[in-house]
Image (cartoon, rainbow, N blue to C red; front, side, top):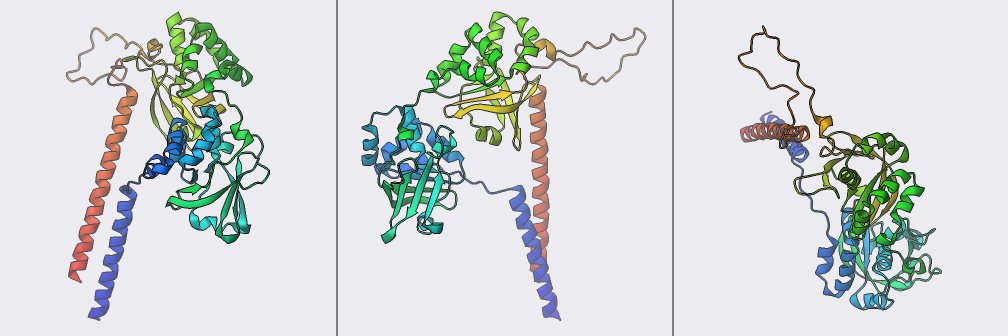
Length: 413
């Protein structure tokens, strides 16, 4: 009987320990480091040219943001063949995009492809710049243990073959070497630089003509174009939205009008995937030192919102999303507090009655003016941080208590 009781005690102790572990994992999840394709390739000098062009085309950033990816790297000799064609950097980006498969193909999987062949979507296909199915790559398990690769628009020819695995993190990222660059007429076709695109023509065709006309009329368009090649995200209010805003717009000074338009541009590229996964403040083209001109990006599942101190706008569509340029439509005009401070001013409090006794200990009015360093959004963030800290401390105390109970139970066995 004593043995049976001891077993039950051990079982209870083990159960308590399991609960403790679950709580620890829940409230204090282990930090995981995302993969970094640049660091992976930096260990192998034979891929230095390939690695360099992944960086300058910003493809490395996109690879690092994705959770399931295969990079078909080519050595320096293979990259020399590509560079001898004297393509623009934007065409080179398309070619290298064709070498980034949106699926996981480790060495083992390459030799166990269902039905012996697979048609893999690539990052070139995902950009929307590849017509038809030209952004797909054939991956085929061949006789003698070889695996062939070929662009879909190259007549079914398997131009390259698998050489070796460089590094694999199942089933996150696989970096493999293939024998040569995959030739593709569509990927190699001349591609205009983002700055060569007619931004206002694109906006006009997609329901943002009024915004485009204002950019031209004020000269703000030049600032947008100057940032296009280095990275730019534009949020365009739809015509129906900005038409209703025109009376407020006309009340602004000439400088204020330019600042309002620049407030709708961010000098970095943000894909839809980035906007859906990242929350926080964003500086804009109008940001200038103490004039912050920022807004907060928030997301709830597939819904992305841009929150200023005055309005919350929702993303309603995508006009263009191809690094380094993204253009989205929004359902409200973004109003910066720097231009519309009057809208933030509290209503005046009623004058106190002459005979009313003065309170000995008065509390601050909820309608006090907003202090520069104590904005409502900042206070909310601080409160949320404090609340989150209290929750974690409470969780830690709970875990510590359970661990103590487990140790006491175990020691008594």
